[in-house]
Image (spheres, rainbow, N blue to C red):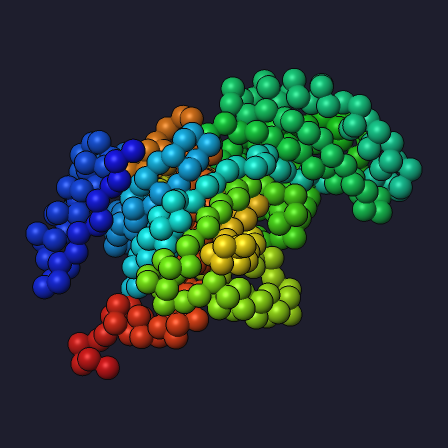
Length: 393
């Protein structure tokens, strides 16, 4: 596979029209199509139908390219420019540096290791005995519930029904596959039907479709069990590349991660990554995703260790990526163009998109941790990330 060229920069004025146009042409060649909306063509208001109410216009956020990112996905090896929508100076530069580190290791490997969107209805009974009877019926009714769900969707499928008892309450954990969509609305409708049928047959006193509401909040359950698409990305970065590109050693990165782990343990956080929210927010926004799921998506684990050869092994585990390449805003305007840039527009690409996100997070964490070790973090933000007021202060 021929490598993608480096993203061009202008030493004189990187925001001059000519410099911006050169990068846009590069992106269009990579996407294999014109990127007219990214270039400034207005999006028709009617394209937002079903996505928003009381429309008055479209928000503009600067979009930059990070990369190239080399990653071995479940659909095969690929090299892509990653579109990132952000107002945070130094962010795209940091991720690009991390992607150079990844490339020095021959590229990342990323895989979806688990898939399943969960919904958690809760039913309330007179007491424990009635709740336990409902548990038995729910477990015996999987095939019936699966047929019921199949009447509501062509793409979604009920794959598991799990139960838990909390006093007189029955908590259902319904697990769905959703094709290439996030599938939230589909799963919510299916959970409504399943819980209503179970409530009818068991005489539940109360029923709540979101009895244990994990939607758009970090939670230990999703961190352990996974929700949406669970991704692991890994790379081995040569010691020499770390020294040349980031002025750091594998031992320094392992040491700083040990310090972070101590701090995270005291925090009690489910997010043991370093800047996952940065990269994920930028790509989710660019690609028309529901950015509120960032609270779930950004949790995960970062792991560093020194290999037998003295290089750095690094991995990122993201158990709860809620993303899609169909539905929502993913196939409209600039979002469709950004997904096309990644080769992930439309059916058959959601897992690949999630795997690219995993590799992107890994690259960003590598770069940021290296900047902490080399004491370059503040200087880089002073140079790239300060949008100073007119008076210069």
